[in-house]
Image (cartoon, rainbow, N blue to C red):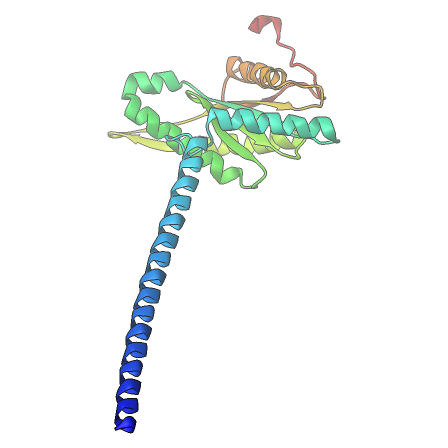
Length: 232
């Protein structure tokens, strides 16, 4: 009888252990499932956050960086120039006769022109250290890191040729695009507005002297471009 009782008790104990083990395994599986779900949720949130951050830096129309991103990068390049011997250049770009495109074909076609020109810039400016931005309206800007003025002029010429190759359909017509370029080399004494002003002055000369060309602001650091009397 004692043996039977012991066997019965042992059987009950084994059933209890089996049930407890099964419950633990179920709980473990449920916990692992919840952990996987939470991990996926966290990963998704990180991806959404990265996308939001990226969108906050970009111009929605052209895919280039936006004006705030440009301002931040320009200040960073100027800080580098003040701390150590370092050369970089700014290229300001203005699409020629863009207002006429909007007036003639409408803003939808104008947007397509901007998008095509943004893509044309990105096809030339390939270094990760360089920076393409939509400055505003039909103006764009490129910051060329570790690049003196003469090198920037060559890049600007390649950019000019790339934009010259842009063709945008407008009904049965095809719009040809050109742009004017002003190049200025940054220096350690520059404020952001100083460098932009020099590049803009060079751009002004390019626009007033025929468009679809590259003009460099002076031949040395910190020198302003001299405007001919006829252009003042």
